[in-house]
Image 1: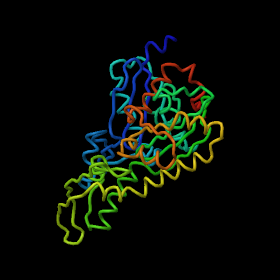
Image 2: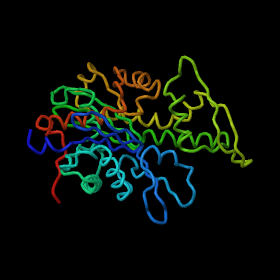
Image 3: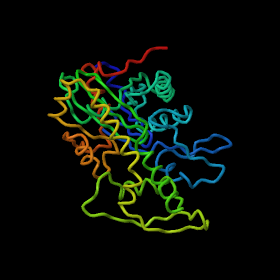
Image 4: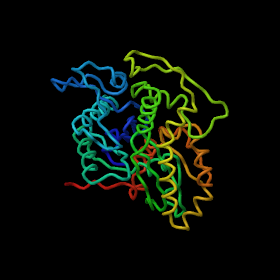
Length: 342
């Protein structure tokens, strides 16, 4: 451990489409906030970042805009992402700003060179000394505690807000991966569309997310549930309440969930036979917020005939992985995407 490591606080960041989590060396996870920024339209001034800004989604007057700067797991708005990152970095290392921190950030495995540079530049502008990128499925596998450096294969499915990452990992590398831009956000949109098309009811993004979390499922439940929802009647134009059952929500979510299952199937078809037999023994690990959808593990088990396990605390697997990499850089140096000095 060098002198710099003693006086700088290194941080791991899971920069997600829906939420950003930050891990600080020696402390653990210190921040878990929605990746949302509220800005004043005319002046471009930042009014709120994180939870306070998320509460404004769909509720702001014309002069305020609540923005999610990440789309499909990658940076859609560079300037706002930089502000989001610098706000979070400032919050976690306010007291000991002796030395700029070393930062490990997780990125989707299907990210392009341009997108990598955008992540790197925004972290550096936000105050990072060195930036290392780590592919999300690899970070999730390390966070779960899988032996990624072994020759035996492990399959990880990480369903986040913007992307679903399906990867087979062996020997500190990703043997094959599929990154599809269908995940939690698409599921929320599917719920909005379903209610619009079938019941002429318009609901907001936050309501859709709440419905998905409370009664969403991928397979029939032992006891089907229902909740009351509020929205706007598109024909009469007035607010309206209706009862929605978990059966209807499952029908609404069918398309995005089927797309994820299809991607898993394709990924299994492309896996070398030696690694396929490892996966048969060890099974598939589900991580990310999408892993919390009830019945998804059961549905995947039926479709693939493989053991499927949901990771403990699936929402924090990726950020815990970035933390473990930071704690043991020499051991994990192979898994990092090296930063090239441009």
